[in-house]
Length: 141
Image (cartoon, rainbow, N blue to C red):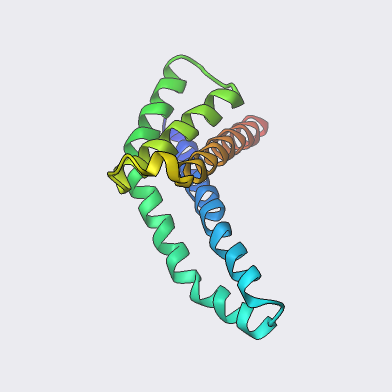
C-alpha cells in the first residue's frame, strides 16, 4: 500500500510538472516571438519567467490535489490502467481548475480552457507513464 502511495505521489508531482511546462511554454513562445532574435533579451525573459513558472506549479499542485487523489483512488479500486482514461481525467481536472481560477463563463469561449485541458491531458498521460515505469521498476527488483 505504501509503495502505491509513493508511486502515486511521484506520478502526481510529475503530472503537475508536465502541466506547468505546457502552460509555461505558451509564455515562452510569446517571449521568443517578441524577442525578434535578440538573444540577450530572450535569455532575460527566460530568467524572468522562472518565478511565474514556479507559482504556476504550486497553484497546479494546490488545485489538483483533491481531484487527482479521487482519480487515483478510483483507478486503484477498479484497476483502471488505460492511458485514455488518465488523459481524459487530466483534461477534466484541467477544465475544472481553470473554472475555479477564473469564475466567468467567458473563460469557456476564450481559448484559455483549451490550454488547461491540453495541460491536464498531458499531465494525465505523464501520470500514467510514470506510474507504469515505477511499477515496472518495482516488479523487477
